[in-house]
Length: 134
Image (cartoon, rainbow, N blue to C red; front, top):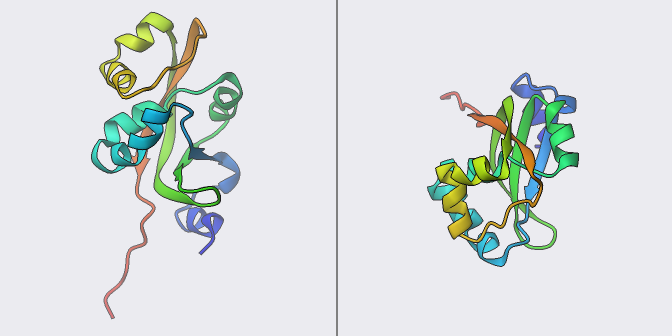
């Protein structure tokens, strides 16, 4: 099944979705990100709620995020889909005061040197297919 078919089957317009293939540049965070996706979805979601300016602009125009983690050079693991909610500006100091961001910092996240950034609300949605009994 193609991703677009899956999205359309859930009444999600693929043109309004942004696809992430996360690959942290920080070695320690890169190692633990799959574990966070599986065991700490709150931290995984906090990780993907802020990005550089180019991705921020794309997120502001998107209604959904489809999230993957790099798995080798040419593969990715599906983590989940999210509705893009409201966003807010945070200063560097405010960003690191968020408990999830502070915990991610202990796991190797270095963050951005920008004085302000946008942090997006991302609410998980279920893309799994329901199977009918035969």
